[in-house]
Amino acid sequence: MTGRDAETGRVISGAREEFGSRLQQAVADGSLVRLTLGGPQGGDATLRQLSVRPVRLRAGPRLAFVWRHETRDVTKNHPPDEALAQLGELIGHRFATAHLFTTSATVHLEFRPNRPPQLHVGPPTESAQPLSTGQSHDRDKARPIPAQTGWLSALGVTTAEGKVRAGMEAKFRQINRFVELLAPLLGEAPLPAEGPLGLVDMGCGKGYLTFAAHDCLRRMTGRPVQVRGVEARPELVALSNRAAHESGLEGLEFVAGNIADTPLEHTHILVALHACDTATDDALARGVAAEAALLLVAPCCHKEVRPQLVPPPALAEALRHGIFRERQAEFVTDALRAALLEWAGYTTNVMEFISPEHTGKNLLITAVKRTRPFDREAAARRVRELAALYGVRRQALASRLGFDLAAP
Image 1 (cartoon, rainbow, N blue to C red):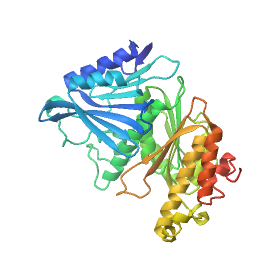
Image 2 (tube, rainbow, N blue to C red; image 1 turned 90 degrees about the vertical axis):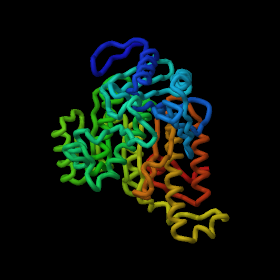
Image 3 (spheres, helix red, strand yellow; image 1 turned 180 degrees about the vertical axis):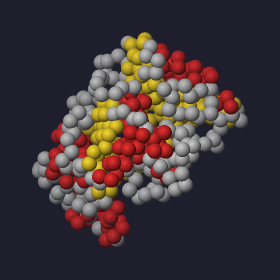
Image 4 (cartoon, helix red, strand yellow; image 1 turned 30 degrees about the vertical axis):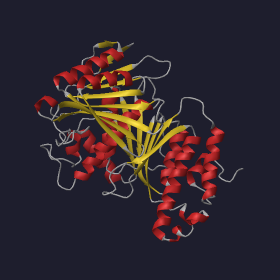
């Protein structure tokens, strides 16, 4: 197996060995910032990701393993030698992707069925202090997108000196949280092995997360990218294009348009964050029709299903309260969306996007296109059973996909 170093252009042979060598060296010289393993295989079905970072405890240097599950995180600290031995057994066996961030490089290793491992090496994206200088649990959190990143200043998130502006702290955290979620998904999605990667962000607003997606996609894959932000307001399109030009970002553009009629040729990843009510369904349906490898949506304003809800008898008394009925409508709507995407041939996951202290609309639905056969009839049955339980007779995504909720 060979790969290519995106920074130096040199040819790399032995992907797993090269990655392991770089990881071992980063731990030894204190340049490790963090390691993320994604694409879990077998074992615990609730496991989503493993994050590893160096910490200094009273007992000495350790590597903190954070096992991220659907509903909980489990943290364990290991001595460096023990940690490296465990990681050697996990990478390529229990996890299909590995993302290594050091102060000198970004390294991505990917395993896919019936294909040799793929290794990509790019320039560093983070500048945390190495462990040898006294890194500890109470240090400032390392960010995938450091405050010194040029386009953050162009968008007004940071000052020219690389300091987060007053009032933009939440936006800065949101940008970095988005990249933390997107990065491992790039390894899980069946993206094409060659050619530019295409991403469309529908209803992108000022484009903060479109810029973040471009940054993440370019650095993580080391390949040409074509990222397009679609926004209905021309003044925001002009502002975002000006910021992209000032930042010298190739393969990033913004166009005026809407979800319903924007062309989606060569779209491998579709993003739609906070599209209102059934606009989220429109975006998902467009992504499915384009056979996108990866979909990410953060739903907003769940109006369609609420009037239809016929509560199960056990919930009838509780759902007479408006706030419970509203939350139940949100749950049912997004649960149906996830189930319909499963039927459409995707593996879905629903997670918290950002802290609820910033917004109640903090759910993120991710969908990775399947590459193996699955039981579509069973998936259809699950959709209809859920709809019948709450008396839902129509739902926008079901209609867009041609799925009859009432069929036997």
